[in-house]
Length: 159
Length: 419
Image (tube, rainbow over the protein chains, first blue to last red):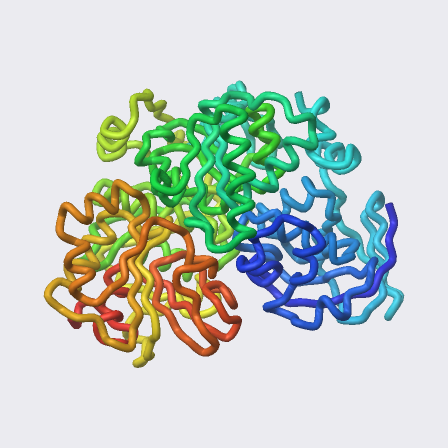
């Protein structure tokens, strides 16, 4: 899988309370959740996000609660991939299980940059300065879950 | 191969002689948990995947604790969805209003978790049960649904950080101060993907309530789990609460730890985490006079009977500052009833506090104590992220029940030793 998208840049420790505040967790409808995505960190996110955009952040992205509503809201808002220096472990699992592509990568990426991401080969290319970086693709076990289209669809593989 | 306590429990549940850090395994589950926020998403996934039988109707716990008693129509619909599912599938451990408590206080109290268990919960604070010598960790709703269907979950075997505790905590200093101190030391991602294994001579002096509180906030350091060795204190608690037999796993003498920290409990002081990260900790020599608007004493972190008893010791015969709305939330029905019988509720009401039925409510900004723009709260809860308890421009200071009660009396963030 390859994607190209524009970067929306955030910092370290983007927590699940700002990704989708708990006051909106009285629903599990992806569209409703997407309408409030990033509300407490970046109130303009919902207005500016375009389908195919890429969130790029620092370390420990998705820390905090186990709410799967967080990757669901990000995915439903149109984000094609989240790139971060590191991910909090529950968010990491939830992204895989719900089919939100994520990449662990640390590089000079700025707000508004245009990125190409090649998941199979683990390559990120930044159009701004035409630089290229590498990331480690998921282990085979997790690739199977992702390729199958989520945890339940990989059920037979996992017996 | 030498293993940590966590690795031994994972190996036993994957029917393996040993596991190595980084290894991906499929393990059998002893208990699968979700609440009124995470269960609806899990149930939708479960139904989409064929809606068959659950793997074991006695090994699933559904606790309606976050937005209950239902805060609005949407929350009521979500809870109803879970209630209908629980009845349809014959889920034995379904806890609704009147029986429910905050999940991580309720499950140990009901004896649903014992030493040696492997537990997943669709709630990040599921790591609490490490206090009983179990491996328990938070997952998302899809993992929970998969666990409900198959009784299994995949895990990446974690490496570990060891915390050697020695000595004994001073008066007014509790498990909350221990874990806030540790999070301040290693940061909010200091234990990312790792287990936090506690040990040392100091463990014996810590009550089960303190150990539950310490393991509860392992996630706030990014940890996969927190875990305490099983000792007489653990076995006594389990015998008093459960009919199940504990299975004792101990770390091998040669187990490898990526880092080891020595912590002298006697040197610890009351610790407060300032906005907006649990790692932003300060002790009172660094804290100026900060006026507050609200105090919350409760949550899965600090809503147990011993927490309420400490608060009552400070509040007895006194009045809270009239500017401070003080909300006390016993974590379970049993704790509430014990607090009534022991006269704690009398003390709280006479001091001018509101006492609520069990709920997670204010901790996550759900209901029962939301903050307005610019307001500050001292809370015995576990997170102080932006907007956690209400308006994005409000502030949460995390602290122990002693600091929270002392602050309620004075109206500023207060060291309990000065009361």
